[in-house]
Length: 517
Ligand SMILES: Nc1ncnc2c1ncn2[C@@H]1O[C@H](COP(=O)(O)OP(=O)(O)OP(=O)(O)O)[C@@H](O)[C@H]1O
Image (cartoon, rainbow, N blue to C red; front, side, top):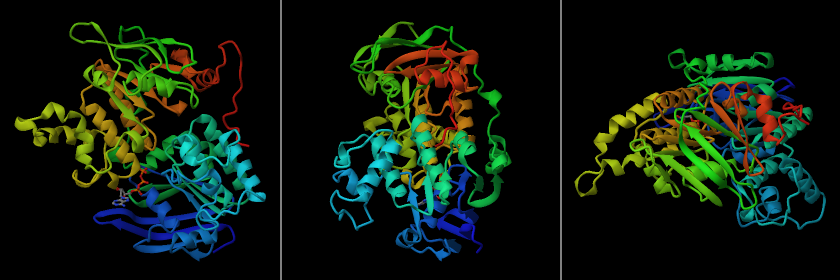
């Protein structure tokens, strides 16, 4: 092993029952590089991360990290490896400080508040969160976004020589991602190896020095920095028979003049925010953007009947009579033909104890009740197959639990559930989190087909890139209200960013998205 190489995996294989998650995985990473692991949903990325972290044992092949064979999580920690997994694992009842040092002193045997560690923790957490955090606070009282930072800070505080981030930025907004990148840059400069598993291509292009591509459990190649482009990644990660749709299949049509199928009047999503109006034209795809906590999340939830707004009225037009009906609850929204897809599948999406079939079909059970209220499952099978095929959901048996699927494939099941309801309006709340590039494009294509047939789409995303070339209009939220609607040439990175930061149209602003330190 030369001085530079910190991780070496050769010929690694790993199966779960019938499923061959990794068939032939080869991988090498060096000190002082950010190395991305890229591949379709279910291609084996998380399995690879778990093997390196000692959580899973390979069936075949060798794994060497910093010269050591890794056989357990403890061994991985000992050589200086830290992993941030997709799940946000915190002890809700313990303090922030104790959560940060779990496993260092033995669980919760921290030595009071004195010393450098307290200061170090305060400094790193403040840098990540963007403001100071009280280390005495009980974690259960903090919002999810801070819990996520605690998990990230916990790994960074170990000063790892190898840091693995498995989709750790999937739920972060723009500002937070920039802060995380700053931290990654700092660690890279200090000689650490940083592995990132991400489906966010813009992020990859910005930060990765190299990328290893997995396809169906096999390493198919390594790209150097200058070769990391969307086209190259797509070509390598997707077999030609499954190659994703071309952009022309989902391109924006600018349908903004059609009459509104859904309106919101005097809507207030926050106690102290100004009220605003919103119109969703028939056949249009309207993007919704905003920095974290600017009201966009509350807005899409209000429109879908999931959360009550602080004031105002949401109405949907009936396709038969043309009359507008108010929608205030989830039930009313469902009856009016609104389907909702959440990107936060753990909190408000999947039924973890249920099968893949049930998770996809649950929304249409009510429409398929036979005598005695028994669900006529055979009637649902063609619908199930159609959704699985068109979203290319990678499943074994439909009766397996949904939790046996990779994260991205679980998300696809939720998207399939929304389509299966045959809705008039689909409201998607950051649906592409953790979904691979090819599937994102398939999703855009399916949504465009849906819109071309007269459906309407509200699409919230934390990734600006998602709107460009796809959305007919982008509504940007700032300070709790709809701040600006952009269309045509204004659907581009700079105008969207400017609006996200609350800049007025005539102020010229320069954004350094690549700001990393
Ligand atoms: N514990 C498990 N039991 C059964 N099958 C599993 C298990 N873990 C992973 N798999 C299967 O192994 C394959 C690879 O999964 P893995 O999570 O590594 O993919 P991934 O590339 O990380 O996907 P994603 O991008 O969706 O997160 C998938 O087909 C998945 O269903």
